[in-house]
Amino acid sequence: GQQLNQSPQSMFIQEGEDVSMNCTSSSIFNTWLWYKQDPGEGPVLLIALYKAGELTSNGRLTAQFGITRKDSFLNISASIPSDVGIYFCAPAYNQGGKLIFGQGTELSVKP
Amino acid sequence: NAGVMQNPRHLVRRRGQEARLRCSPMKGHSHVYWYRQLPEEGLKFMVYLQKENIIDESGMPKERFSAEFPKEGPSILRIQQVVRGDSAAYFCASSPPVQGGLETQYFGPGTRLLVL
Image 1 (cartoon, one colour):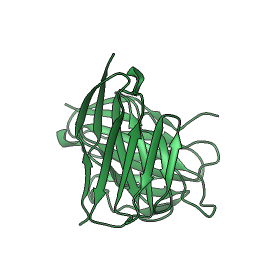
Image 2 (image 1 turned 30 degrees about the horizontal axis):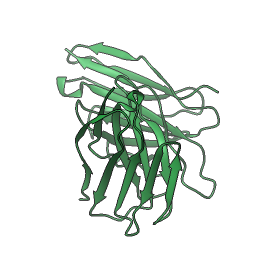
Image 3 (image 1 turned 60 degrees about the vertical axis):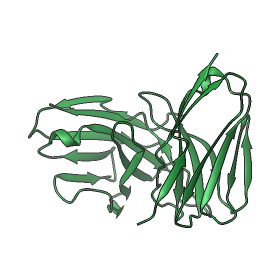
Image 4 (image 1 turned 135 degrees about the vertical axis):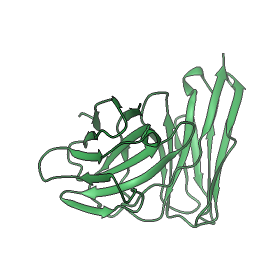
């Protein structure tokens, strides 16, 4: 079966620092989504990527869909305390298909 | 515009009882997905439904679990004869019909099931 690896598993950073996390897979995907989950809540969509090589920004967040279609990264610039949470990559094979979730990156930001 | 709604938010059941989890998709969304999340893990796909049809149930256990999305009313995930291993957070997501691109999935707040 396909393998999806998300790293790092956790990060402890100082407020104002930049953050980078990534997901790699043994399979080719057609779409990469990035979600954030706060404790006790459902995942909230941050960025959606639909084309290989695509680079998309949403405020302080930037994500890229790898050219091989097997990986993606998410960067957060100038982190703030409300960035705390668990970030998941969630690629999909098909339009309208199920999402495959990574293991998550838990981000802690020290004020 | 209300988001995806799930109820109950918390559900406690004893072993052997039935659990019914409800999901009302966002307005205009006709596709519903159910995912399960165990502690310290990512979400795992269970089932994908459109109105009155199950499209993909490859992630759903063959026994005790069933899902429906009737023409009227919410989608229901039903777990019969619950066991302790069913304790998890169950999330519903909805998306609009495909219009030439990927339908983005929007998640509800989840139902936390605890089996005693």
